[in-house]
Image 1: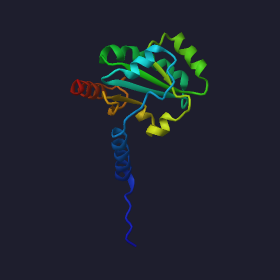
Image 2: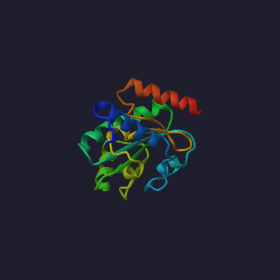
Image 3: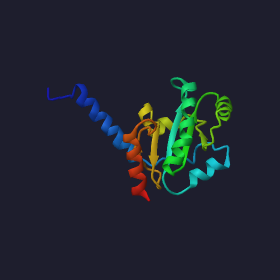
Image 4: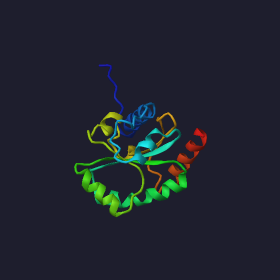
Length: 161
């Protein structure tokens, strides 16, 4: 039998690399998401790079909401818009909780629950990414708490200007 399969870490790394490569080749369409506020609508249409952070109901939603406060800091440091894409069962409750923590960034709601499936961002590692002006991912990973990812984002933003 001439079938050969990679095993162990090398096989997993190769599959992950192919998944990342496929993700980076996509064009992300944010216009299909529900934007209840004008700020979110105008941010989606803005030319230039933007950071997208995806929030779903997996894991500790309360913990995720607390970490959202840091995105106000990120917005100032990166000089690019940050957009939150939310898919949770109770969108009204999450909206109320965001008001309580004074979350001021644009929010888009994935009412159909199709965003993660369409763009294959099932793993948390893919929940934060930088889009270029053509809405193609340029960097993947959460820059909060990671100097390496901060530098990656800053470099990608400079090269896109």
